Length: 270
Image 1 (cartoon, rainbow, N blue to C red):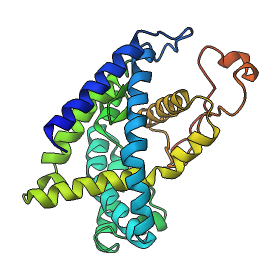
Image 2: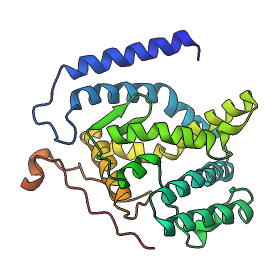
Image 3: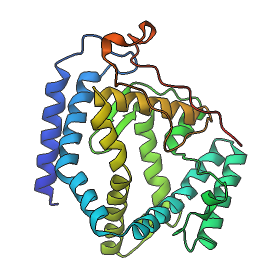
């Protein structure tokens, strides 16, 4: 994609977000004071995703055998455990740090470079972590909910955390960013993006099928998950999400101002 195309995309994103920002919602969620702006960016992201990223991910899953896709996904996940473990260390969560480091060593050796997730098969669960969570553990407030172009759901704190994640992954360990061969590095970056989107196909299809308001569904699920991570509670890939299948008028009275209630995350099992 050349600079001219990127410039056009950025212009469309800005224009859509500004127009959406002019229409303030009647009953804004206190966690989402910029809902008008966020919905504009969400709509832009959704349009780009349906036009580009989702079709590419679907083609990838169609032409690539499942064992190969699983191997690719596990390798990227295994490398990511290094940064997750680093953040556990920075948070003072020594038990999580040791467990994550053990996962990485076990999968790298017995799992043939991480191609097989033998650690999870033997009961060593994955502990997701990032620098945004570290800032939260250090006491930095989450701030308003924020939808970022291309990156999607975030918050003011987590947006700042993305900078730390980028720097940490680029200079902190031998990941994709450390590869000197530019074509190879860019190809692996592209493969990582496609793999990430492919892993979310089932989730996004479910949201499209059951959520009356996908924006609110994703926002509430994201905020619930981030709060659980900061509090040190267990976060599973298939954790319970807010339920938006019922009509808004049938929602419990206690939830009318804050949206549908999200089930309490499961406590961590350490």
